[in-house]
Image (cartoon, rainbow, N blue to C red; front, side, top):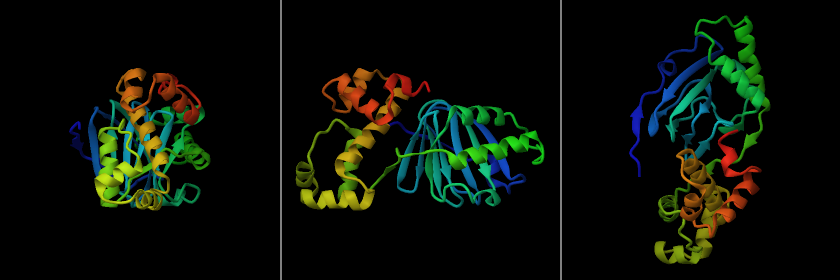
Amino acid sequence: MTKLRQIAPSSQSRQALEKPVTVVNRQIAVNCAIERHQHLWGQFIYASKGVLAVNIGNERYIVPPEQGVWVPPQIEHQVIALTRVTLTSFYVDLELLACLPPSSSLLAVSSFLKALICEASNIPPDYAWRSPDGRLLRLIVDQLAIAEQVTLNLPYPRDLRLMAITRELQQNPGNGNSLEQWGNLVGASARTLSRLFKKETGMTYSQWRQKLNLQLAITALAGGESITNIALNLGYDSPSAFIHMFKKHFGISPKKYLGA
């Protein structure tokens, strides 16, 4: 696996918020990881260019440019740049949180919201809250409150037997073992493994694998891999079978996905 270079959170994350919304812009090189940390306030994480992975608790979000991650206060999180990333984060004070999701969420970023974020990235730190800049930021909070939640987060199990399976699938996603075959390897019945997958991740083994494949596919696409190589590495019989699965989930082809 590629070794990640750890970098510090922004300087603003270690200071008290002086405004109801603080805008933080960063350029992050590929394979850099912002160290795990938490805030007393909420944070919306968005990359206008590049693809992020955001780890929150035992869940991982893969985040292309048409999505962003909402992180509530006092939730530990880590941000990883899977490609070179242009990052804009919004630190949102407690007084504005009533209309925002109470738990971490992957949010769809509409064309309108994307344009607002682009404008907000130029707001100076000393802006006045009762000014056009402040109104723009309030509008962004309003748009986040009504943004559609996307279900591409992937919960990871904590059972040691399931962890062995999921670790192997991350390294070798084309592995086509059935639960019976996995059971022979980790010392559990297929029925036990099936029950544990549902209990610890909220989804079946096959559903978990498909979400893993989608996340790995987005990561590979961001890295410039060909659709043929991605399909073969994920264990699909042909590129067309992979494209069909991708379009069924996202409604668009893999080539169009990152260009949104």
